[in-house]
Image (spheres, rainbow, N blue to C red):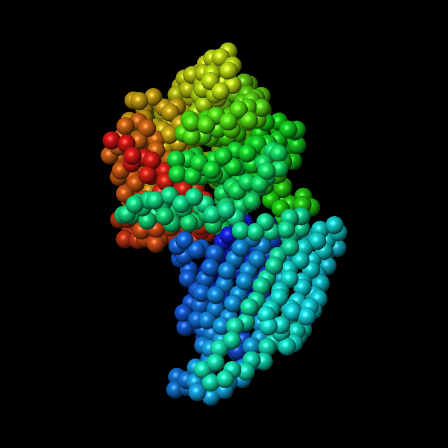
Length: 633
């Protein structure tokens, strides 16, 4: 992994730059560059002073950048021997907005003599799809692809064409470069001869504009999100940072009637896009403080709801989308994610959010407007999701996409205690809790907003039946806990996992079982001191660095805290919240997406997970959920 990357994020665009503000074209776990709509629009951006890389005096920040996560600064100077005094200092300020990076370099002369310096910037755009950059040993053919470079009076333009797919990156400079040179590698070198009087100063203003395929022209500055006062202390500071991160992660989307929306992107670097489950959970966790996120998320997901069957995308009528991608590989169907429906739980979560939004805001206009979409979602749960035929929501592995399709979607996530993967049609526990809550919410809306009491009674009866069935099939009396899943043969997957916290949250557990589960989740096997492990220790399947088999996800723990509070277990909710806030404090109050399962008794600081996204939306939402969980007695 690189030793230093600064991430700038705004309006669906992000840049990852090095300590001096440069970009080198890295790939793998943490690529650098300027990214828009799933493509890298700038892959080299390397500054030299008189032919040498400058010395970094003040690096770009790597941690949270507070309320302005789209801006970074660095201070540079000429390389010099220890006894020499550099003639120049360079003050660099970089800013990201939608489809754009600006780089302002102020060059100050340090001495009493005139200075002449040759500044050069090596620039390239490889237009790599994000799926090409991942460190997963996959390679994609790109027939008929052509790259172009064209000199401009004020810079250079890079182009990429593959059949009807066209993308461009335009680099402009003020003042214009004195020369644009070829490098032999496809990159271009922009050169300036700069003359400064004694103690003089000048500023070089550079702008990189991405023109992704199919993108509308940048819409300009997004409306400033509503700021909420959060108070003092660790919770207030974590909420303030979460608020800044959620503002940075807002992504343009379109509603059913073409209206402009802003929804939460999932996370940087790999998921600066709309993921149904992530957007829904983020919206649910922030419904009190950021109801506009829920409003726009519901409309965006209604606009992308499936209306036909498409087996290659796991689409069925009424199903809510899992992932939307705009990149080249998705466009040419080399990956299935252009509009991919590999999620068993996004559809019930859509209904949960719709009902919760109407209840919390006291405004039923959105529920009225989306009645047709809600009815289609309920129909999917019964007809295609599996409730009618099998009694549960279930899924099968998608060979071209996701093997697991609940929130723990890594290939080995649903496994027996010895680590053996569950096979066949999987009935994961957490989605059944969501289904129960969805039926309850839909029944409430049917009985009030939609004025359909007969359907309301039918839905309420279905919810009661699902709850009774679930408690009979999933409860493990000898463990005092719920099973992780049922496999394709109907066998209980008796692994003890954090999904039980989601079951507390949804209300599918009765009071007696909720008490036992709450006690177990705060036991040393689950609670690391920072949060709840995804699998309890003491099982062969547990691994502290496994994504969903031992790591700690703050949003997962926050959902458990809400569940504990729902059942009146306020001391346990407080203990869990204290651990999560200590975790946030250790990261300058930016809640991480995921950390390893190593406990506070193993190491005094949280041990990071090596491939975590940051910032990430449901991690940013976690402090707001804690605020809600702690609001009770």
